[in-house]
Image (cartoon, rainbow, N blue to C red):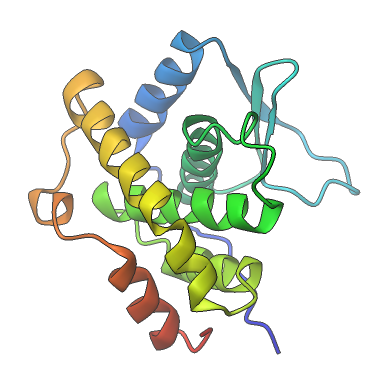
Length: 178
């Protein structure tokens, strides 16, 4: 049985990160909005390339909302609109892995959602995660620098260094998903 992601809950402690990422996406020509989901909408976030829009479900609690925005930002920064040769499963592993590492960097524990999500999209195959590792780590490093240097978000020093695919593998094994 697949372990299902658990939506993140809690206080709204990351408004400054949300505002900085929205500002960056808007500067890059994307419209970012909270979306009122209909009963048939089963997604938390969506990026539409043709209209350059990023939607995040407005009914999510703030920690999940931010993690979802980081996931959609990762899709944009990973150029998933132009990398048409990459299967969707790899794109989802890449985007969620970047969101996971960025979440950890800003002090948001997204393990309960991200680890099962990555495991499900990778079909539990660590080789899938490893094959995406270079894109994941290169993009995460660039976005951490963007958050800290360009957008002025103060990051936890202990989280800025040493994050890698080993963290994803260890956490997935700990969660029993790989």
